[in-house]
Image 1 (tube, rainbow, N blue to C red):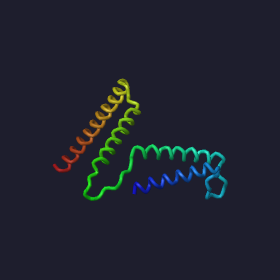
Image 2 (image 1 turned 90 degrees about the vertical axis):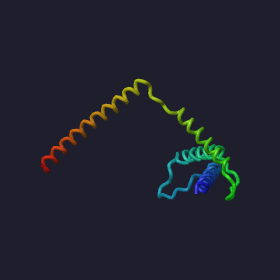
Image 3 (image 1 turned 180 degrees about the vertical axis):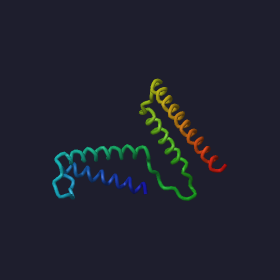
Image 4 (image 1 turned 30 degrees about the vertical axis):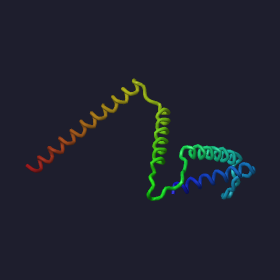
Length: 136
């Protein structure tokens, strides 16, 4: 199913690129005419989508399909390597908090935990008193 979605995205990107080359606007099924800048926005989006498809195609090459007796060892290694590389790249983009932010957030969390503990302790004590009064 994933392969079909990928092919559909590729077909859509090719179709939008052809429309852009021909200078034609996408067909609007609505009653009014499309806004003036809509074609430009869609053209930029289709170029970005085509570039994204090319980039991801380089990351995930498709090999010949394996039969039942063959192993998928190289394919799994490639997936793992791709996953680790993309995870590392994502971690480099994260804006990590500095020491002051970390201590502030930690103290807020500890404060709320103490407040919730006291609240639940009072509720438990009151419920215990009510049950003891009703039973004895």
